[in-house]
Image 1: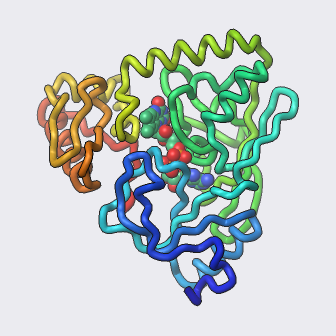
Image 2 (image 1 turned 135 degrees about the horizontal axis):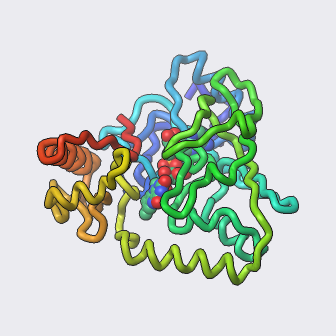
Length: 293
Ligand SMILES: Cc1cc2nc3c(=O)[nH]c(=O)nc-3n(C[C@H](O)[C@H](O)[C@H](O)COP(=O)(O)OP(=O)(O)OC[C@H]3O[C@@H](n4cnc5c(N)ncnc54)[C@H](O)[C@@H]3O)c2cc1C
C-alpha cells in the first residue's frame, strides 16, 4: 500500500465489488477508494496518475456488470458524508454525487417540489444518474439539471451549466472524469399531487418490471424508434437462460441474475440475445449497462 501511504483509512486493496453492485456480481478491484472530500479526491487521483493506475468511478452500481475476475486499477466511490449532502434553496436542490436520488425524490415529495417524479423506481446516485441521464417515458434527470460540479483527471474542479450542459438519450456532453455534484431545478407543487404521480409511476413499474429480483434495469438501449424489449420479446427470447442468468418473463429487456449466477452467465446471455435479434431483425442491440472488464 506504499502507493497510497497516508490514505489507509480510505483505500482498501483487493476489495470485492459484488456487494456494491445491484447484480451482486463481480470480483475484486485492486484498490477501492472512498475519498472524504474533494481535496482527498485530488490527492488520491494524483497518486493514481503518478503510478499509472487506471481509475473508474462507481455510483450505486445499478448499471454495472463487473467482470468475475475483478478489475485492475482503482475504483472510486463517493460514499462519504460530504459527498452525500443535499441542500434545498427555494425551488432548487444541490446534491453531492453520492446522494441517493430516491431519497432526494422523497424529500421533494415532502417539501412539495416537483421535477424528479419521472425517476421513480430508478435506483442510483446523483453522480451516476447525471452521467447516464437516467430516466425513461416519464422524464429524465437532465431536464432538471441546471449546473454540475466536475473534476477532471488533473484535479481541476469546475462547473458546467445549461445551455452549455446538454443531455440526450442515456448520455450527456460531460467529458470530465468525476461528477462531484449537481444542482437541480424543481417547481413548487402540492405534495399530494407529487405523491400521486410517484405512486402512479411506481405501480406502472411494479406491474411491468421484475423489481424484486437482481437486475440492472434495461440491458440494451432502445434502437431509434423501436423498443429493445419488444424486439427481444418478438424474437421469442423471454425465459431464455444461460447458467443462472435468465431473460425476464415480465420485461424482455431485463436479465435476472438468479442464485449462483456469474457475470459470465450474464455476458453470454447478452451476446446470445444480440446474435438472435440481429439474425431475426437485422438490428444490432447496444448495451445500456456498462460492462467493466
Ligand atoms: C431495477 C432497476 C431499474 C432501472 N431502471 C432504469 C430506468 O428506468 N432508466 C434508466 O435510465 N436507468 C435505469 N436503471 C439503471 C440505473 O438505475 C441508472 O443507469 C443509474 O443512473 C445508475 O446510477 P448509479 O449511481 O448506480 O451508477 P453506476 O451504475 O454505479 O455507474 C453508471 C455510470 O456512471 C458513472 N458514474 C457513477 N457515478 C459517477 C460520478 N460521480 N462521476 C462520474 N461518473 C460516475 C460510472 O462510471 C458508470 O459509467 C435501472 C436499474 C435497476 C437496477
